[in-house]
Image (cartoon, rainbow, N blue to C red):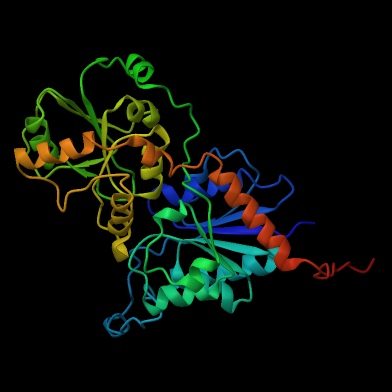
Length: 376
């Protein structure tokens, strides 16, 4: 029997779960797979046979006393409040599952503390790599504790300050996009969506992991380019003082993001992993506006995209007409092929193959576990 592979999946946003499903779908059918997450609903409708372990939701759990709350966080960890029953139950469920299932590889997406826990429990772990300022002892220690890292992006997007010894044990799958629908050409996409075939269209899109695209700057953009049609996909964030314009429409969540991205002349997007690769898959011209994330994750990814000439960026959302006109002019000059080359259609398959190969390599030659047979 093949050694099981388990995933710890953070439930903030949708990206971690969608990435897990994309990779797990490529595993051999006889590979036991389990997912441990506080967001089991994120896997509703997933067709592959997997075991779901519902973990307690630790986010926002109250520390029981002021004295416990006053204890400082050790430098080697990031989120370890004291006195939380939810945290104890989470760690116990994880350890029990790893032990009872004889897990051969634990894929952590993402948590430095869970990766360290896996090493302490003597279970090989792989951490999903994310951009950001992660040279602190907590991150580096968790990376060193892993048998490898999986980077769901092209190696050209790697940061220059990522240590060489860690880079050597990182597998770069190429740009992983979880969307599987066909990419239409621009004319077909516009016809399907009922959009003007000749008008300039700018699509602003973000995922579900943050507060949404700020709407106020887009009202300025709509004034700066009044002949363009501006469409927003996903959540937006309003401050209450915005003026609406006829060439700026909020669409919210739509059935097919791909069609809107394919219809666009320019895409304004956050720097989330899947969001970037959604745009790359259609070869779009990208204005990347990173959202705030811990450790500057999206800021560092945006820097890498701009460095490669795959996107343009402004230091902040433009608040004046000329600022938007200049930014749009730079976006129009982009060669969409540079961004498209960062997308790999076989990324999920390559990631799955590497994870399965690593698991088998780690356990090659190990004795089969003893099976206890009850006396008759």
